[in-house]
Length: 396
Ligand code: LMR
Image 1 (cartoon, rainbow, N blue to C red):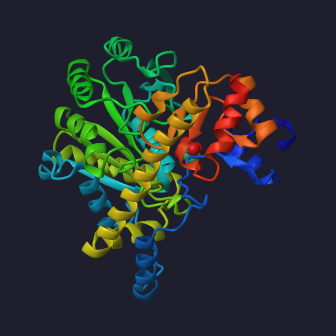
Image 2 (image 1 turned 60 degrees about the horizontal axis):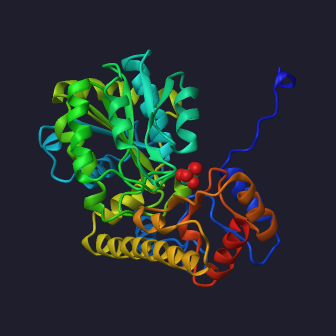
């Protein structure tokens, strides 16, 4: 049976991570996988996480199963983090299942959508996170794309986006990135979110909001503002969230899938389906990541510590965006890179071609995704000059 299999290419993001590890050039720079790095190039465990882990180690009393929805305290705290004091929460219309990372949450959402309507199409932005399309297709759903990023003007194709979304059949699902669009860094503004919310009501599609970078754009509150606006407008919405980036819990695989239904009774029914999906995929989620997040969010002191650390990560990334813009401009490169400073989160497209990307890797050991997506956090004061010179060279 196995001999029938054909080898597959490595994942465009994770393959790069492996290639970087093997590179022996001391000047190598990893701008590939979306992982926060400090000035020294490390991805440290947050202090708030360390403290919460120490607390859990002392106080955990059992390793028994935690149930299909996972840690219920975590689920409730995630709902508050995502939605604030939202009318949907006050009306008891929200149900949440802890999930193994944002990707686990998306897979649960995909199976849930299939149970609601096996013929539903999921619409994603062009471009989107490389794994979105394969993930929904692997679950047996059809995926179509809607215009989003204007590669030429480094802006949103908002009118084209709205014109396409007007044609989406009722009952389809439209995926939105809440903030820090992966891979373009280009987000909707408040007015554009209002237009999208009105359109969702008018057209009757179900929004699915992927929120993997809350706190990395402007603030925890502002990064969720579009999601909250959508949730206030529509009867039904799906949220896939992740604590990988904002809590730095990447390898703990901790996220959540939340369903907002039109009323409490429908929310209960939806929840029973959600939990049945969980049972059929992985039975129950792991405990550790959720315990850490609920411990942090349950303590005023640890929450403040986490907020400070999150602010530090965001401020560093925003500072690096300005540094990259200025350093590239100082090298006299003809191409304009000022858009990098206008975009949000970890990623932007450099906007260079395949050959230039390959030269960066081959000649300079600078690793960026084949789409020209760079993880801004991989830049530091120590490597910015090397990076800017390399980009200037390949852009000559
Ligand atoms: C990324 O986009 O680099 C991250 O979300 C990591 C991943 O799994 O692709």
